[in-house]
Picture 1 (tube, rainbow over the protein chains, first blue to last red):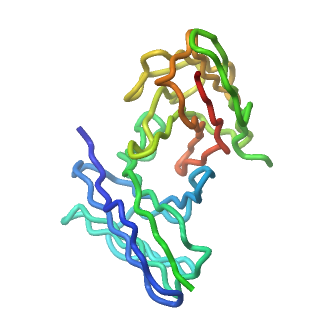
Picture 2 (picture 1 turned 90 degrees about the vertical axis):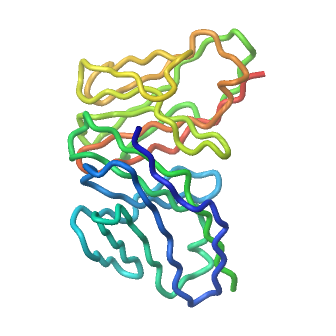
Length: 113
Length: 109
């Protein structure tokens, strides 16, 4: 059974700090990796995706993937109170719609002013 | 370009009543999904449709039925609602990237 594990948190960081969110997955054949942000009472919003080992940067966000260790992380630089949300890690096998995404239960991030 | 839309936003049912949740996407995606989200349980896949004309069970299909009406629309039906089906329901669609609708908050009394 495919599993995606995340620390539930909350992860508390002060404004301006780097927040580091981590995720491990069980299926070694996984090929696509996603981070979603979910504000309380709202739907998940895609913020990052990564397919290859290494780092991918987009603004204040960096996704890191290590397939050998089955580990994916999200770094948020210069954290803002508006970044306070639950972050969901999702893992997929291939890009076909026939392969569904497996979601972790999410890590709650709290950024204090 | 509205993305993924869902109706209704909120619904209260009595035990045993039936209802259909509607979902539509305008991104020309082949694949569509229905999830439920409960506190502490994360997102759980109910049913999905990899392409028009096909549907498959997900992790928690019992008590639900789905219809892929056309490429744009994918509906979820509760034939006889139970309190255990109180949840937030999300529809999603996907090509390479998956996008979610705004959700339906359902309460079954």
